[in-house]
Amino acid sequence: MLAAGVPALLADPVVTIEGGWVRAVPPGYENTAAYLTIRNPGDSVVRLTGATTSVAKSVDPMITTEKQVNGQTVMGMEFVKDLTIAPKGRLVLEPGGDHLMLMGLKKRLNEGDKVTLVLNVEPGNSRVEITLPVSKQPPTK
Ligand SMILES: [Cu+2]
Image 1 (spheres, rainbow, N blue to C red):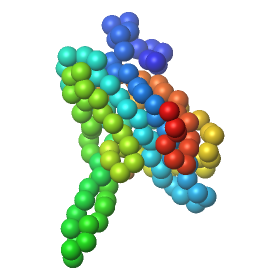
Image 2: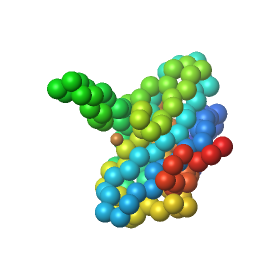
Image 3: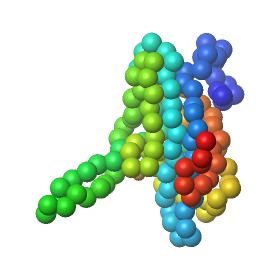
Image 4: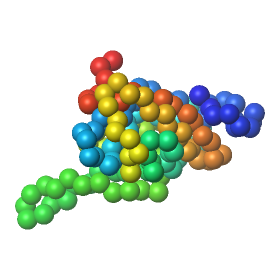
């Protein structure tokens, strides 16, 4: 669904969203992550540059990294400027992989809550509004 105020030119959906959820966090946690699948039906590359929400200070794309430290595999995360979605392709945001990081939670997110995110998608500075359930684990389909 496109947010109000988007020019009629962009009436065709820039991307389509499948599934999606936000991880419920224990008390005291300041950050969490959102997972979803974004499809690009178009013929040119689309980039997800982040999102906004009323429940966190910032929402930015992250990738998961793996490093070898003293012979041990250490998992980490890194912020990236954007995540690209190839023409006719899809971007899968999932635990252990790419995700949207919600930093600075303004309220605790409990199982059963809903979180509205406005995705920032380039080109066109498009805003795609989605509402995702809060869950401790991926919702079953
Ligand atoms: Cu992260």
